[in-house]
Each structure stands twice: as C-alpha cells, then as structure tokens.
Length: 455
Ligand code: FCB
Image 1 (cartoon, rainbow, N blue to C red):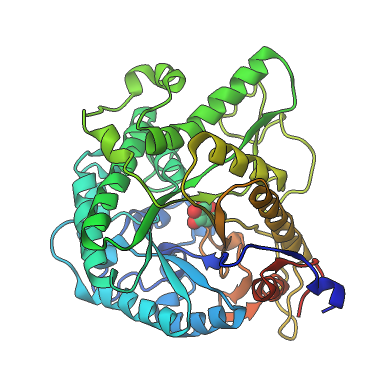
Image 2: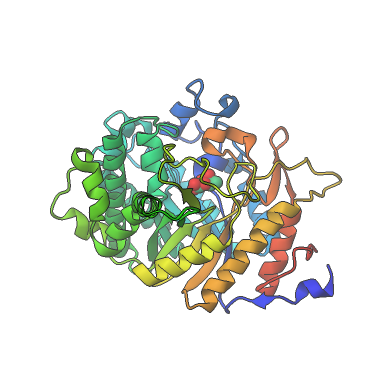
C-alpha cells in the first residue's frame, strides 16, 4: 500500500460498513434439518430456467461453513453483515408448524456474528418462497401477507433479542415482475396482472411484517429494500421524456409512492387499467407504515428511448461505456442522482445502500491472490458517489457490498461472480480478491482510498 492510498475522503463517524448475501444464493443444504422446498428449488431444477442448469442445492455450502465465513468477515473488518432467512427452513410448508432446527441455524449464525463484533442485518424475504404456498397462488394470493406475518413472528420471537436491524422484503420489483410478469425468475409466470398482484402483496407483506416487528421487538429498527434505478434518455423529444417518466413510474415510483405516500402513481395506474390488483381500503395504510430506514440496491441506471420496445432491455438507447460481465453499464453518477432524488422526493429517515457491486470474469486465484482492478474501480466510483450524496445532505448511513462471496446468481447460475471473495465451486475454498483487501482498508480508515490501496 502506498501512503497516498491512505489519504482519502472520510465518511461520517459511525458509517456502517457491510457486505450482503441471500439464503438461497449461499446456503445449500436444501434438504437438511427439515427445510421445505422453495420456488427456487423447483425453478432451478426445471430444465432451461438457469444457466447450465445450475441450482442452489450446494451453492457455497454456507450452511456448513458459516463459522469460516464469519472469520472471513472478521478479517475484512466488516461492521455489519446482511443475510436473509429462508422462510422454508423456518416454516417448511409456508404456514403451520415452526421448524426449530431451521431457526437454530440462524440462532448460531447471529451469535457467531455478535461474538465477532459484527452487527446482523436480517432480511426476511429474499425470494425463497415456500413451494407449498406457490401451489396456493403464491405471491398473487392475498393470504400470503398473513402467512408472512406468522413467519415474521416466529423469526422475531427467536432472534429479536439479538438482531437490531430488520429488512422486510428484498426488491419487490424483481420478485414480482421478473417472477410473475416476465417469467425469468421463480416461479416463472408470465402475466402482467399476476406481476402486479404479486407486487401489491409483497408490499402488504412488508406492512404486515412492520407491524409484527413493532409489536414483538419494539426497539428494533426496520425498513424495506428497493432496487432503484435513475432513468435517463439520450434524446430530447417530448416522447422520449414521456418514456423516462413512464419507466421511472413502473420501476421506481411504483414502490416508493406506496411505501412513503400510501398511494400508487396515477399515471401508471391508468396504464395498467384492468390489470390493476384488487386494493382493499386498509391496504395503503398498511403498506405505508413508518419505517426507520430505506434500503436501496443500486447497480446501474436505465436509459430509454421513445421507440425502444424492448421492455427494460438495454437496447439501442444506451450510451457507450464500461460494462460489467452482466452487461450492466457502470455509471456511478446514477447513484448520486438517485440518492439526491429519493431524499428530496420521499425523505426516508435514513438510507442504507443494501447492495452495490459488480460481476466480472475473474481468473482463478494464483498463489492466493486474485487481481480484480475493474471491481475495485466499480466500488471506488460508487463510494465516491456516496460521498457526493452525503456532502449534499442525504442521510446515507451505511453501505453493503454485494456480495461477500461469489454465489448462485439466480437465472445466471454460477456464471456471474459478484463476490469480493472468490469461491472455488469444486473445493469450496474461499480466497479474498484484491477488492476485498481494498475494501478492508477503506473500512479500517472509514475513508475512500485510492484504487491501488490494496494492503
Ligand atoms: C439483486 C439481488 C441479489 C443479487 C444482485 C446481483 O437484484 O437482490 O440477490 O442477485 O442483484
């Protein structure tokens, strides 16, 4: 490390530094200790649904290697670890009997984190819906919110004495629209009405969980995580600007407005017409319960063009520029714009970046080292964007890298490596990438360091 690398712009005192994962992406052990099947087990085992037919059966075997993974986190100096609980481990059939063995796993994990001085940040729903519920309509059925409330209660009663930060739902946009509208994620339905019903119910699940958390762990802090993307156009006709507003409405306002204002955006409601889900009188009050923070997952901005008919595609409207292995444009200023806008329009009490990171085609480690300068540049750019937002008054209180380690990247299987720690999938060996070493230095100094500051 160079001395110059140590001189960086400081983050505020108490800034939370973390890394994130999700249950189905890392745990494996899908049939152990009474876990029931989830929609992702069924989907990933359906031919043609994931790259190479990959499944989460083994994933990175975190269920057995969690101690070693906590050691890794400790070496990185993480102050916080965001993980998710698998609903089908806790209530294998989705409703009914609680499986204490499933809860035991998270109990041990939480104790291990606390012993290591790492704050647990627990996500209740990161997409592994119990398959038994899917057979009853899954997220499209209104009863799902009540079932989620019972599950939330089982988890809060067991872990609420030690877990201070709760995230209800991860990315309702992706869970609902990719799962039920475009069919590229589990359970693979392709109906707009189903997607909208699922989105509405995910928000009702969020509100229901907020109530349960407030009742059972009144001192805990809780919020939701949304994936948000600022929308731009490279063109300047009125039609292009209109397209920007529509895309923003579908992807961002559709979730921000109900959570923070208790209403859906009118312009988009009109577009959806008869596909709008049934909304009961009490729904919007439930969905807009006060939260302690908003979690934002940011990866890239969105570019649109009036005649770009590929929905959410990265079509001809996109600028040239650095892209990751997933084809996502690297544009850190999008994060500053987004944070400024969310703060201005919705004023969440606090904001945390609950995911941000990049997949690149890493070469396997050589003598224990793996050089991933592009990933470091990605993190550097986005942390700089965070500093800009903080400087402009955004109450950004923490940042979680996605991901702690390489893992099962949903429909992309194991083909996309997002980790700051490399996993050899044949041996399950973990190796810190240079990005992990760099991030550890950033954490230690609580400051943005030069990209070369790899201790
Ligand atoms: C987000 C998901 C997360 C991971 C990253 C790359 O949409 O929340 O599980 O797959 O994308």
